[in-house]
Picture 1: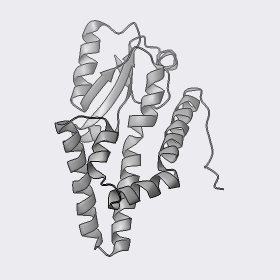
Picture 2: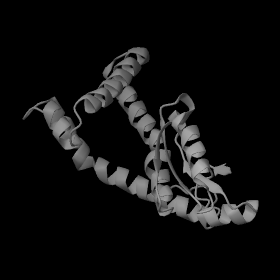
Picture 3: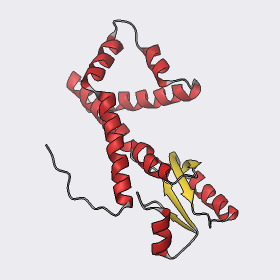
Picture 4: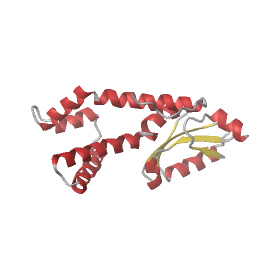
Length: 187
């Protein structure tokens, strides 16, 4: 049994290049290193039920695992959850920098941001609801949250995130086709 975490590498290509029929393709994310990740995976039809269970056991040691029949979901998972920690860390970094700009020492701004993110995730897990409903619980009419969210919406935050995830998805598909790319050009 071969487990691959190569972004974009299709099962057929892995199987051919490795001359091995029983291949599992996995897209984990970096929190898997501490057992808190999520791995989306699929397998060739040659992987036996016993091998599937062995792969599942390995992936469960890394956090949550989601098996999918359709391999195309792995490119989507690469864009959403495989790359996801980068989005979260960038968002957290921006919040910390804003806190420092307000006047907080960086150490305190980091603590405020980390605890806010942890607490928000814990609250969602305690009371799973649509994220818009949870956001509305925090947002008073005419209040600070309403002002901040209005600004973020005007600035196109959701559109930018959607575009970034789509770009990551397209890049994962390109990698599967063997397309190499040079440095990203800036505008």
